[in-house]
Image 1 (cartoon, rainbow, N blue to C red):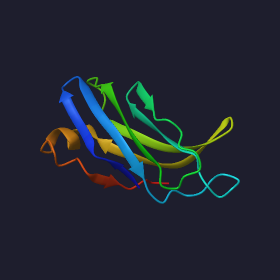
Image 2 (image 1 turned 90 degrees about the horizontal axis):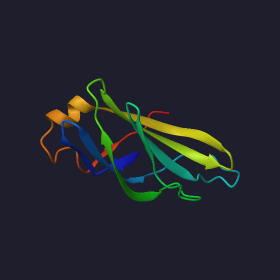
Image 3 (image 1 turned 90 degrees about the vertical axis):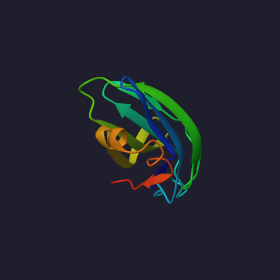
Length: 117
């Protein structure tokens, strides 16, 4: 489960996303821990958080601002485990931009978004 307290369409051209934390991630490493990071994609725009070493409950508190293009319809966040040169899938959440745009400014904040595996 990933918590993103701030998802705002700043205007029709950009979207600000803050990734706060994830909870109870599946262990993927050799020592039964994960070293997770999150990639955030909006159309061709992409951002990646830092890797949090050996944590099932990582906290990032990182943000990005992505350009929204007319064809962009969803924000995709993918949680991956970094294992040397390999990346292993932990889960993904897709958030429709129409849901963000139609919601009152603060209603998306503080929501936890379950990952699909």
